[in-house]
Length: 157
Image 1: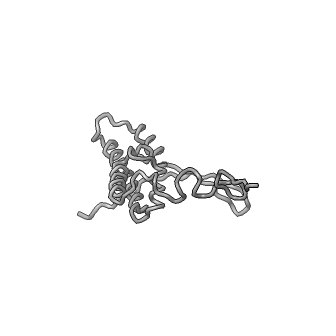
Image 2 (image 1 turned 60 degrees about the horizontal axis):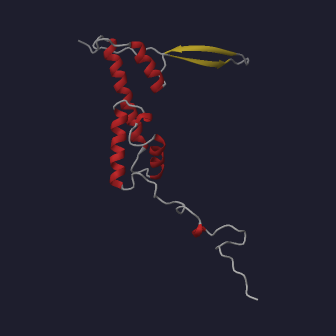
């Protein structure tokens, strides 16, 4: 009697072998939208320009921020985190300059409340923080700390 052969290429547990499974092999780079160093350099420049203009991560048009973070992890030399943080700070500086100009009356129709709301949402900006302080006896005390701008020393005349 002839020996029966299994028509599928399976292991003893009935699972297909790795090469017979559907899909790409693990660790492939097939899904990378920006698959060359030149394309990634262009993406990185676009990210820096976008953030330094004061725009948010969420509205970056070329890809979502999860993709950017993935590229920062996979290509740390091409996507240095310190430069992205610097671009975010530069963007915040743009917004603060806008608020400064508006507060000085240089922007006609400036809406200070809308600017303040934007700063609170965009940069977690606060004028006041609440801190809970533990006393030595175990009781707590809630303190509000108001952050005032620093006095600027004028140069001697």
